[in-house]
Image (tube, rainbow, N blue to C red; front, side, top):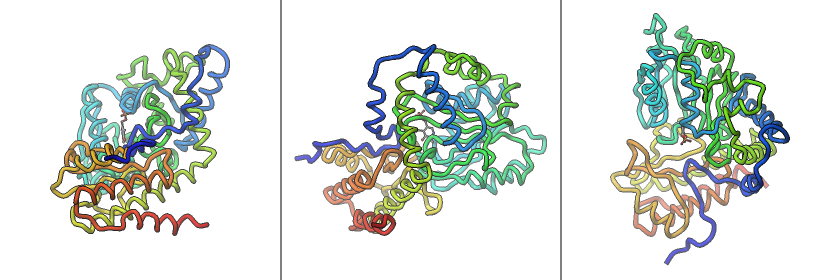
Length: 394
Ligand SMILES: *Cc1c(COP(=O)(O)O)cnc(C)c1O
């Protein structure tokens, strides 16, 4: 017996739910790429991305996924043989570093811990020792979806400044843009990158990069530039140049609609919504944890992300629970990645998600815990409801 018929709840950390309005905006014929409305759509998307990244710098849109945005960021500011410092806090900054390594960049990793955020004091200490300033860039992730951690980007900036180090600060905001505050200019971030399919509610396939003046100055001497990723080429006046070829039209129609929806809600309100849903999730997990099997992967509550919650299962394989939720309830949860593979599962509360969607997901998890006889404290969903009822007033 299953109770799975009905809408599937995709609760993985990307791709996330695409609003019906966004899907509908994409359902139309292709249009001319040299004239007409597409030109304005590009201009407005580039401008609104500056609003979303909170920067006066330049923005670029690529037909690519997040990995493409990583490559765009690296190739535009670095040269072969340059050294970068990767701040480990899960899977993603390390993955970005592996990409840099294949490009011929020397990669040094400041080892971290999958259960903790990056330690700004360790960053400062390492940079102070780099007296001859061989480190050209620092790579860090704001929210690491593999560990569920949120890194304190302003604190990382402060560490760099305290060390008096000139390295560029490159930040991955794939799992945080539109979900939590990100202040590119106020925080002194030189290059920020993201993708379409997480907080920005658009199908996968678009990559976004923002660069400030310092990054664009470094760009002039960057030896890794290639035509496809090149900022200078994309800054050309001809519309075709802005995508280095045919624009990904339908994704742009979708993105335009998604940005309209995000700005209509208000960026601050969207961030507040993510905060509340994350708190509700954590309230539920805290109850379940009383059974001594489930625990938060991220030890320090202040370091838990607002778009993703990673839950360790002490010595048990999470697969039966995930299978139950998917097959019996049509709720798709995230598997553990990397070091957490076979040890943890993830509940995403990222992008186009509201209270009933989250409560439905939490309800299915609690149902699975019960049906499978996995020890857990009861009342997780109740705790989530109570939290939301207390915060969302009549
Ligand atoms: C999803 C994700 C990426 C990779 O994005 P892709 O579109 O899968 O290439 C990079 N960084 C973080 C933090 C992510 O969550």
